Image (cartoon, rainbow, N blue to C red; front, side, top):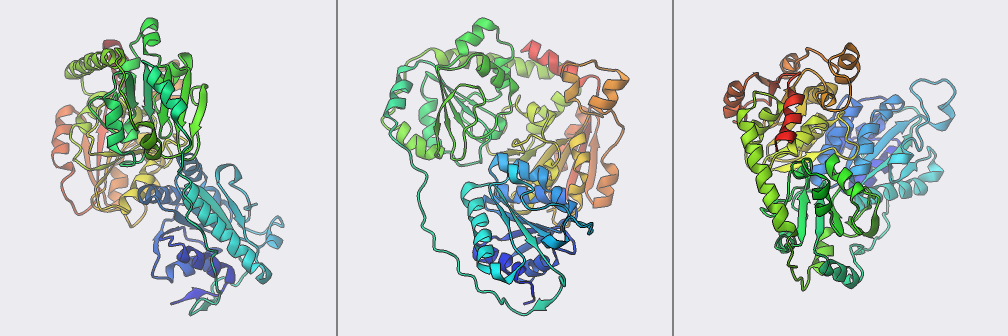
Length: 553
């Protein structure tokens, strides 16, 4: 075993080892050589080399998203570190544990004009749970160990990103054969923080109401016990709205929220207004449900979330800081369903919308909406589905997806910058097939995601290429002008074909419904390399078809 001679590097590596931090994503550099030598020299660690730091961070985020355990990131000093920031912000708002370990110059070499230096301590303070700034002196041995351990413990317990900044003096490449540091981790007691207080007051309010709404946002698959949702699904006074990213399903639930709300008039919106809103999960995609609940605020808005409560609708009055299962175990004990016309009425509306949805799709020409419908009808069971932001996740909201599919999307910051990298990171840490569906701007923006050696042959990418940022054609603005085409929609003629050739992806393309159907017949079949399917849709037709869709339903 070869290890770095640097004491600081040994401290970081050994503390990660003692905490069973298994996956380490490293971006090549010189100042981080002691860390790289240490992590690659210990057989316990799974190490990955990703050159582009922005892609590396999203790759690590995807791994942590799947394992629900911290993934460590290691980079050199200077601007390399700043490329982690988009993924760090996403991890912060999505409660995904990352351990950022940055190499740095010692303090006497900072702000004197030395190369590859920035002010690294506390650089992420607004978007990390903890910053550990280590000292490059032997006298700080115990203090440094405590800081490293605190950072790792917080990432694990609070589920979010932490930053460990490690300054190294030269020489950087000296080796030893075994650890020369002794680290004694403090004993910790396993405290059950997932507790809940008396719910009798809230149960009484709930029982007295004839109109209750449950809204489930981003949610990790298989975390909410179905038996609790089954009880609530059988209550006629409860509507359960679910987003595509909620990963829960039931025939009595209301997916495709926008289909329900978009066509409603003022009277119907008043009738939909709940007395009590119970929110579960993370951030909400649907702008229409946000607008509705902000304008038709419930008397009570309760949030069940172990980490934080977002006052998304400006009427929050109770945060149950616990897990949904712990909450429901008490909340639905001795539960009595209420007689009400609330859910039966809106269930009829849901059926009407579904029928109109199906009728509309039969007659439209090939377009984004038709392509998504075709794709979602053919995804194999038990696929891990990663959706990019902007148009892709919003189109997905219009469809009832196969309930065996696990759905993910970077909704913490809702950026387009790392969707493919996240999906690939996820794919490397699971044996199940992973599919990434993305718009071409998001894909091209993150094209360095393909620049790594870890992509499994089961990985699939579908790129919807409508030659620009199609979502901007739906938003208010002056379409079909040079200014709009250049600065908003970003019209282009680029394709993914040459990237696929460079990165050894099997490439297919579809330009019609017939060619798309033909491609999908073998797209998911086993192969010797990952596959990418690029679907070309009419840029100037997609927005009109979508606008008319909402008018039709």
